[in-house]
Image (cartoon, rainbow, N blue to C red; front, side, top):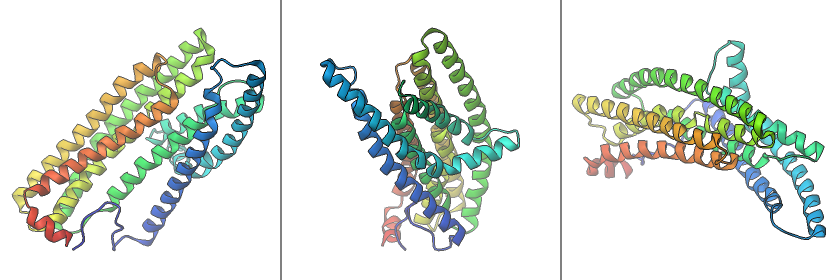
Length: 319
């Protein structure tokens, strides 16, 4: 039996699911490629505040205008193609007059992209194309991990028990995450309105950072990653008893709650900092990725702890 990995495509995976995975990987790769290029083109903008002569300043301003147009051209396919599943999910929910994880994500992209495009066409104002591409790339990274975790499930009675446990955990986690996200959106728009009244030039950047932080990526990963770790533990220990299964179920639930509460704590700590203007949109995107990776690491810790008790069986499974 080969070693378990969430990146290994199960042999029983349906063709449409394989196609979904390939499309997501293509979107992920394009988003990361565009992000790296846009970040490079954004560098001249960071030099604008440095002291320099009038001729150098004029040359730098011309370079910034050119780089903004190139960044816009690279960001458009990221927004339209890479983020297409986000638009689908948000529009589907809005037609039903309900809210899902995709709605705040879509708002964050729109709030950063539209002002940036306007600033590029008008030649005035700040652009956030680097933040947009980083946000989408990091978001897709988190979602790809989540998709791999959901698809990497085994079959059998004990795996079915883990899946029933997943349904219960997901229902509770989704209710908490949705209401928590709604509150964050309200705070973000309120903070943006306050800054618009007192310092309009900073309002957009602060609101974008808060919308990026409000993205519930890490919270959405809490249950799928812990359940994937539980399935992996069963595959590494095929002789698991009913008693051990009960313990594994409790442990996966505990890890899911830890990850969910940890992600919520991260939001609570970062939102005030962003509201005060201390967190730039690009930094908010990086912290969003780090929180998602922390959730994945917590699930990996569960797998290691569950399989450490049976090293011989794990070695046999990896052989």
